[in-house]
Image (cartoon, rainbow, N blue to C red; front, top):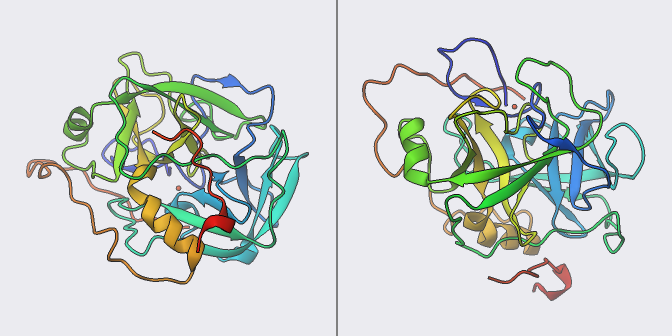
Amino acid sequence: MLLSNDTTTKYKFRSNYKIRIVGGIQVKDPVPYQVSIQKLQSQFPFCGGAIISERFIITAAHCVDGLEPKQIFIRFGTTDYKIGGQTARAKQLIIHELYNNLTYENDIALIEMVGAIKINTKLVRAIPLALANMMLEPKSKVTITGWGYTYEDEMKFSQFLRKVEVEIMDHDKCNDIFEGEIFTGMFCAGGDPQGEKDACQGDSGGPVVNSFKQLVGIVSWGIGCGRPSMPGVYTLVSSYVPWIYRKFVNPNDKTTDILKPRRPLKPKSTTSTSTRPSLSPSVSRNLFIDERNIS
């Protein structure tokens, strides 16, 4: 999410140069599916992601849009983004064909790795995906993890992994808050009157997990970090399960007929004066993806 102090610029990513968990706690043990996506030369941890198979990591499209595989590397199996765990290199960046960097629709991407990740360990495991088209119940709790800012204007990443628990917000209520900008491939969480709990800059692309330890969301965008009554907005993973499986079979498949562009539930208010900034490079409980069973 790209943040600023300009309150007239409403929509800002939780991405490349500013976001960390707000109001959460430090994680003692590695989250086995969590990855830190970093710039190769600087080891700058600009986004998060999640391991979903031996070859693939899932993240937000805005995290890798405009980048090349050779520019990034992945660290995982550690709570410290600087040291420990394992590292891997990217072979291919697969951004959703209908990703829109103005509306944040289809903010989802896969990173195909060079070689297979050893995931059958205590410290490194793939996370199961939510079932296709599974909806999230308002007020149910989800957990977000990341190395992003711990408050909006901090300008510094957390060296150690943190987590926070927030509640799912009713879709219509969130759509009202954002004036019709919440599409059906998105959901909102957090936004309690006190604020203080949210994802922030640097958490973009990171996992949102339900109580069944399923990946239900990807950190996408929001206004500021942890502001009172202001939820974060996340990509709804269950809307994209068919797309994910197609890419497993053929990463170069450009078919777009499975997922159509997603429209808001109601029109945006014509009285709104807000603008979006241009962006530059911000129930099965055991549904693990086993590429050996995909043909």
